[in-house]
Length: 536
Image (cartoon, rainbow, N blue to C red; front, side, top):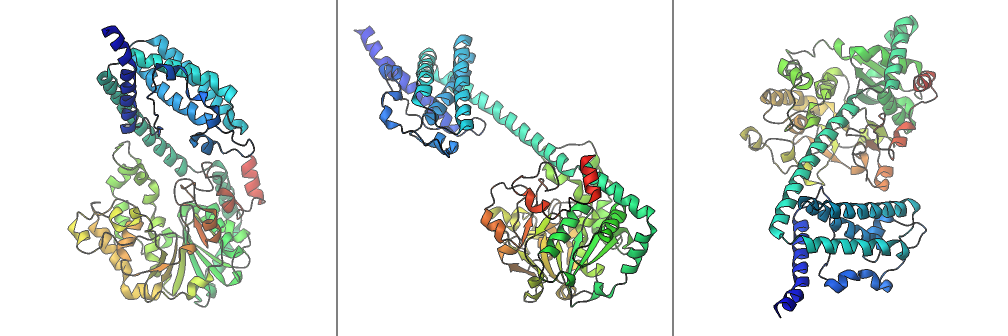
């Protein structure tokens, strides 16, 4: 009688074990895998006869245009059943190895590989898995899973084992994420060979052809550069191809391109490159000025706190030294933060003292509409016209600034809406009246020890233009093309400016393929230098 009772209770113990396994998987996800909840409470007879017995429950998915993601998510597909069986089998592989049952672990692994192969074939051919394909694998895998349940009843040990494996996987996943971020940053910072080649060819032209230098000198005193009846744009960059795409996309979409004036500031290394490129190419008759940041004699450590801070030995060691701290966000180590060009946006009234209104463009944007209507927008006395980015909570002030510091918390609202740099309308008359540059200097000096914010230009921009920013329609500036793979096509098509902010710049190999053609259409691939550099 006792033996019969024990035999009767045995399936119940199997069911309890299954409950523990799935409760464990509900609490701890292995490497971010979302596990489907299995109702694995069958008795021995039902384990021997898997769910396949009711074939009418499953409907064949149409072969044409199969969406494999939807197929594997459907409760009525064999793909879903195989995925669930495979997930449970993977857990038992670990348990079997822990109990030194290597033969069972090997058998489970073999069946898992068969599952993976069948799922891969289904995804590649675009067809649903048939009953004939799925039945032998599901039956054999069900039998193995039942054997695994039958062999390992030590639930407490199993839970502890699974916890330790999950912790190890989480640590490996974290290390892989850090490594991936570092590699992504390195790739983003590296100059592609074709761009380096173009830079060399253009620099050689600048040095060899005196006629180009004479032409550059003649254009320095053009009255169009200070004519406030024209539309003035400024770009600060050391990337000639990126800057060219900005200028070209702007003039190609302008109603009156000859009324556009571009003010470009670059560094000494790229000054000749920029001059040679823009003087030897026609951009629909617009006016283009190129300046060297090193010629701005007033922009020095005695006037600009940022210059003094960037030349600090500790800052240089932080970016270029061998010290690595995994607790520091790797994107904050990007040497672009050391570039003075990145901070020139706060000195636009000083660089162009005779101008009244300008549109500032980053070098990683593409213009898709006529931007001249921006100059007639009423900013209501504000300095900065920008698109707000607070549709998501993480774009509010408290995400950028240290509100535990009373200097910040006493003067700013942590829930204030952030906005975007990259396409900004600046009213320089209001800027000078508000003395916004002095506000910027004040906050830079307050943050000399880096306690108010980390690095970059947006945090000091949020402080400098707090209460001085006019929100613009979202369609003027759409962001995220340098990191977000899922931007709505309708939003991109309606945007006046699209911004490739992020590591995946359109001129790099790691660019998002879906967005790259939007940038490439404004690059003159027929230029002989570009052709030579690409082929060589």
